Amino acid sequence: MKTLFYRIGYGMVFVIINIRVGIDLMPNVIGYLMILSALSGLRKKEQSFGMGVRASVALSIISIPQFFRAHELHLNNPVLSLNVDLVLNLAETVLQWVLLYSICAGSFKLAEIRGKGELAASVRFRWYFYFGCSALYMFSYPFILNAEVTGLILISSLATAIAFLMILLVIRRVGRELAKPFEISV
Amino acid sequence: MKRIVFIVVLALIAGSWGGNLWVYYNSQLPEPVFFKHYIEVENSPGYSFDLNYLENKSAKVKIQSIRIPELPNATVTPILVQNSYVHQNQGTMRTQIMDYDLLQPTFPEDGPLVIHRVEAVFDDNSTKELEIGEIRVYNDLLKGDSPIQSTSGGSSSENAGYTRVKFTKDTVITEISSAYLPGLGDRLTVILEAPSIKHLEQSEIQFGSETTHSGVPLSQIPFPLKFKKGDTASVTYKFDPLQNADAMAKSEVYRFLLRMELQLDNGKKAAYPIFVQSDPYLSQREVAAIVKSRRSGS
Image (cartoon, rainbow over all chains, first blue to last red; front, side):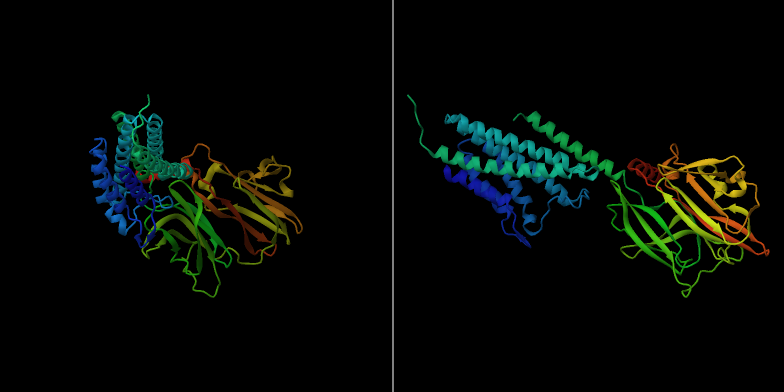
């Protein structure tokens, strides 16, 4: 089980780090496939991971074009129109919510079953923090078209990245803690 | 997390995107728009004027320069961002009359050369004729020896200015006029301070925070006015700030010449120009009103 959770962590590293030299040297598609493979194994232990399996399949597909061409939202060129890049970006964000929710919900339940309340609470807090930050980012981003909100967007974007890293670290911790044998207190 | 929370957050985000895109698209000008200008200029090297315009910040093609085919001896210096607003930039095309050696404009037999449109040149090399108001170019304003010497002058950001002059010969001012004075009505106050009209009722123009200029309003001056060599006079003007006017009226640019028509002792006639200038600074709300009016086609 530890290996599966660690695989999710490594997959998330591929997702969050972009080293672009023409193509992406840390392709998101590889990250999502690693997460997909890990969640497929974990689904057998907790069905909450099933939602993440479906989300990671969809994310693997829509992130293939990113391997060749970045489609991030740009702060310095806030000309938004309903084009393919924008739709892909919005879809990726929503699917990432589903994926991370599924990972966190499954981890939370497994930690609770094993009586690790503090670990479960930490997982839940980090999910709330990530969801809040990324929702704020997605809510505030279009205001760049009509108002000076660059500061708010930068802060929410940075907070989202930090929250993502926090989830990555707690998932590794879940893997470590759940790998330990049951401790029965008498 | 409860499904309802997720749905509410998604709805809020969708509303934010939809609402902002709607506001954004409704805040775009259909095409660049030049302010309405009222400009008088002498066809003489060094004379210049600014043509102001608004264009969308996100326009796919932007104005790079302008051409004024009627003024082949003019050079244009573009200032692409003079003022920046939320969705538009205000640019300025600084136009200067150059050397007499260059190809000269063709003037009509009677009256000045009048220009209503310029050719906007976009950064994809396309061009489009756009209305700019009116530029009147004179060819005969500075003919003859002027018996007047300017001694000082100034202008303020409140669209006011003054010119103080000294007479170098005995002279008679027969008239002070401009093509644009009748149309401006009460919007422009012009006063003349001169020794021979000191006894008439004086009006005052506040110039800056501390200086007050006094003189007789133009409509009450009993022309002709005689001046002796060594006399001084000053002309002061101020534009009404137009509190209640619409945004299009507030965006009007004036840079015209008050012509002092002069008659010398030897019977010769001359003219002396005094610059009158009003450059608007538009607020975001006024720019939005201009965009709304342009989008509605008025």
